[in-house]
Image 1 (cartoon, rainbow, N blue to C red):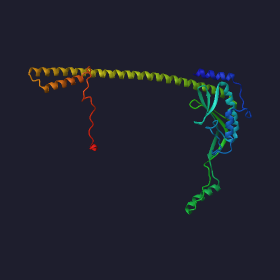
Image 2 (image 1 turned 120 degrees about the horizontal axis):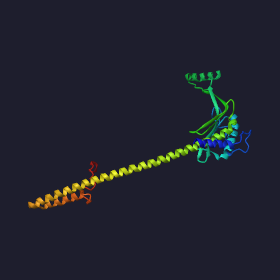
Image 3 (image 1 turned 180 degrees about the vertical axis):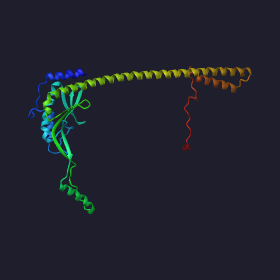
Image 4 (image 1 turned 60 degrees about the horizontal axis):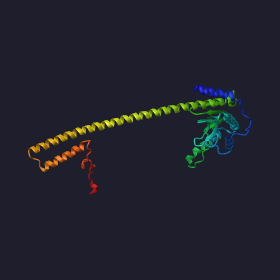
Length: 307
């Protein structure tokens, strides 16, 4: 797998020219046009720092107004640079993700502006207004609670580009360089990460198929053993029933011989001999004779509420 990733990265580096982000969008990618129109709306942003994001509608960008244009140009350059390598981008509206799709491999991508926060210290006027609100409970004339935020939010202008999830990479703006300066390497890394993910998925698919085949063999072996045990139990049961039926017939014959010798073959004894012979035939697995009483369903007990 490592050789595949290394070769994919090397091939991309050799074919990739040095990338630069233009000062303005030129013939932007369709997803870029949609994202620009959606994220440049003035209203509808409820984040206290003014972060704009609509990942279920457009590209997964989480930015303040000051970094929006830069992030759009950065993403546009990346998407166009990845197109020759067979990558396309789409928005997964259900999961709220932007996906890079290369063959059967999908990688999530996003650009997020780092926003910090500090505890908010209210002004003297806000403190007085808050105290007045609490004092109003004693007088019964409740006032309106002043709008005092818990935090102060500080957009930094620094961007983080994140690729993938369970196999992932991140690139951050630093004091020494911006993400734009590493764009060619990022494109090669994306191709390599996609190849690593593809190889991992292929390996997992191979392991899954091997496991399914092993499980199917195991289930067939278990089924065969259970069937063998069932047939053996039936054999032992039938052999035992045959032996019991033969012993019953020997006993019936002995009884009949005795009563004949004694001259006591009464109609009652004759009926018993026929009844006993029928029971021996019912027990004999080779005869398979049905019994009107023993083969009938169990009688249901009467319910008190029926009467």
